[in-house]
Image 1 (spheres, rainbow, N blue to C red):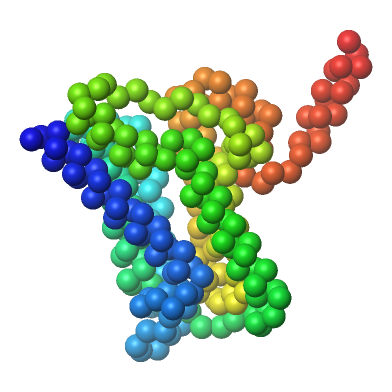
Image 2 (cartoon, rainbow, N blue to C red):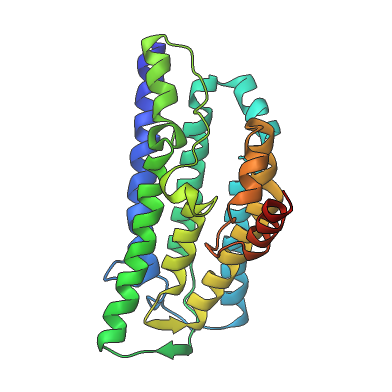
Length: 257
C-alpha cells in the first residue's frame, strides 16, 4: 500500500508539473488564456506596488528552485520522507510556485518593441516555439522521467533500488552543456511584442539562469560526475559559440609535436 501511494503521489506531481509547463508556454507567449504575462488586471497597472509584486514572485521562484536543488536540502528532505519522493516533492513545489506567479503576476505597461503582424511576427513565434521544443526534447535526451521524479517512484513500487542516471553528452549536449536553459532563454526573448513587464521577466529569468548554472548547478554536476570537469572544458555552457581560443591552442600544441 505504501509503495502504491508513493507511485500515485509521484504521478500526481508529474501531471501537475506538465500542466504547469504547458501553461507557461501560453503565459509567456501571451496566448488567449485566463491570465498571461500581459493580460490586464483590475486596478492601475504599472504602479510601484506592481513592480514589487513581480520582483517578489520572481525572487521566490529563484530561491525555491535553487535551495531545494542543493544536495544538503535533498538529504534533509529525504531524512523525514521516502527518498523516492524527494524529486517529486521538488517538482510539485516548483509547480506551486509557478502557479502562484501566474496567478499574482502584475502586467506592466509600456511597449519596448512591436514588430506588427507581418512575417517577423510569425518568425519570432516560430523561434520561440523552437526554444520550448528544445526544452522539452532536451529532457528526453538525458532522462525525462528521472528528472521529474517518475522513475524514482516507479522503481520504489517495483522494489528495485534506485541508481542515479548516467552522465550524458550526446545530441544537444555536444553543442552546449545546458540546452534546456538555452531553450528557455530563446523562448523568453523571441517575442513579437515585448512589453515592460515581459522585459522584466526575461531579464530576471535570464540573469537567474546564468548565475544559478555557473555558481550552483555546475558545482553539483562536477561533484556528481567526475568526467564533467573535462566536458566543461570542451563544451560551451549555454551559448553555442565555437571555442576559437582553445582550438588555436590545440593547433599550436599539435604543430609543436
